[in-house]
Length: 109
Image (tube, rainbow, N blue to C red):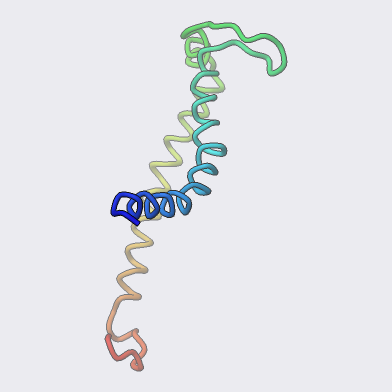
C-alpha cells in the first residue's frame, strides 16, 4: 500500500466518523435555517404557491404592535435574567471551588 493510498484510507475513515453528525446537522439544523431565511422574503400560506415579496414581510413585522410588545418583553427578560444567572453561577462556582469544601480523599486537590 502506497503512502497516498494509506492517506486516502485514513481520510475516508475520518470522514465516516464525521458523516453521521454532519448529515444530522445539515438535515435538522442547517436546512431549516436556510429555509426560514428564504421564507422571510416570500409570501406563502403553507400549502399554496410561493410568491416573492422582498422586504414587505419585514415592513409588516415592524408595524405590528404585538411584535413590538414581544420584542420589548424579550429584551427586558434577557437583560434581567442573563446577568442574574451569570452572577449566581459565578457565586456557586466560587463556593464550590473553595479548598475547604473539597473532599480530602482526592490526592490531586
